[in-house]
Length: 92
Image (cartoon, rainbow, N blue to C red):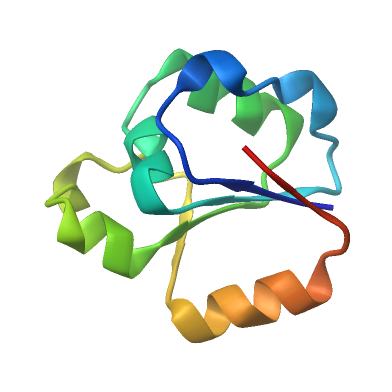
C-alpha cells in the first residue's frame, strides 16, 4: 500500500495503519511533517523505512535544509513510478 500524506494536520494521521512493506509519500503540505525529529515522522519511520518526499514541494516551501535525512527525495517521474508500484493507496 502507498500512504500519501498531503496535509500537515498531524492529528488525522494514524501510523498504526502503516506496515513494514508499505511506502509513505510526503507531498504538498505533508512535507511539513517530514521536518527533522517530528514525533509523527518518527512514529512512521518506526513502521516502515520506505518513506519518500517530493522534491518540488520541499523547494517550493524553502524546507531543503530542514528535511529529515532518513527520507528519500524523489522527483515527479519517480512519484509516478511509486504510485504504479504500490496499490491500493490511502491519502491522509
